[in-house]
Length: 473
Image (cartoon, rainbow, N blue to C red; front, side, top):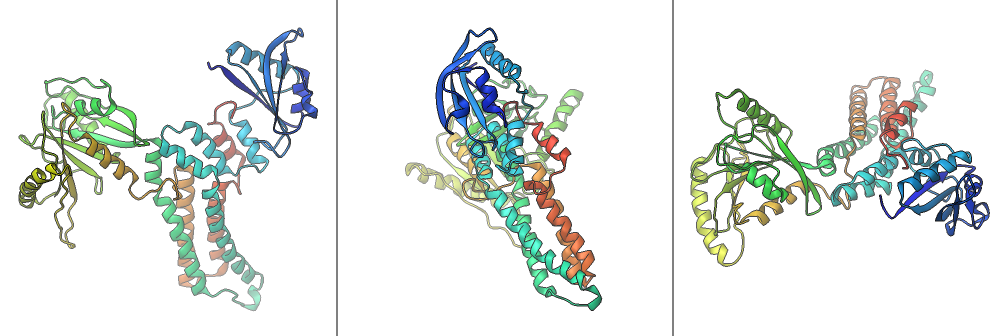
């Protein structure tokens, strides 16, 4: 409950209905985008609340309809009673997402922009807010419309050929059409490829904390969250299940997941925890592997290929800053590099700089590069470097201020379907198949992009989308 609440009334009769419960400047005669102080009356004519009514004329409001917004005191009873009074005067209660749906139906927003409204409301970090704001501005929709228009141009040439099929006329250069199709598919593929990173930035970058039992995973989780989320004990195997929570770091939402220590065990319950830890690895965006330099633990062999991995060497006390990199499977090289790194770190610490190094790998047999970061949860040593690297990895390949990034699973599915249709178009053009078959696949690609922006809107799709909105938006 806040100090002020807003009750929104939208529709063709909004001004007339509002005037039935309003004492003050007649709202039906008020100019658009003006605010007026007055009284909302109860059914007995007495004052229900002193309020401010803001008026928005048709085509100048969020919904595109005449709209009145009453700013009333935040009492829940007052809010409920004002809504009841408007219903008594002839209004109907809004459904979930109805205002945004009306804005879409009246052409104020396209479907992708409308979905961005819900994303903006749900934004839990600076990064997710930026992504929603970019989509609300229509940048994503404009690019999709450009791609769709280019496909319509291709389709129009093919359709024209069908009209003259008896004359066996070919209006379009097949090599040119193939080039245009491939270019369009590549652009759509780039958008689709951004989905994994976009979803992580929107929902929280999944960071799995793993290692041997008693490696300090729960201590690290608590330090990252600045909360005693997990039980910390000297007894190995304390964590038996997945523990997770979110926190924002440098404007990005991270979802840290503490797992059971990975080891062989005869304990049935602990084995279940280890299995869940391994399952968590398959869904991770980043892996933090904790190890004690005095008792190193080898990385599991089933880590997903390409998973960004930071090896954290935990020490109770640490006073020599060092950031290292080593290559999995190159233990002898790693040892020599680590020795060199330690020597360098002494010099670098005097200059207040962190040290970085990498091991060259053969192009014929590339090996995963793993960074080593020394940390101490006791002193906080190494955590600034760790947080910086987490942010850099999360932002790698994306720029939330300028690039178009896909965050919506429905959009991603439609993009993938469009790509499959365009692949069939390319095959048809390459093999010289009849124009009617090529045109059909092209129409399907155009259809799939159209479902994203709402150019094609089945009723059940709209119902599904807007039912997820909150009441009042």
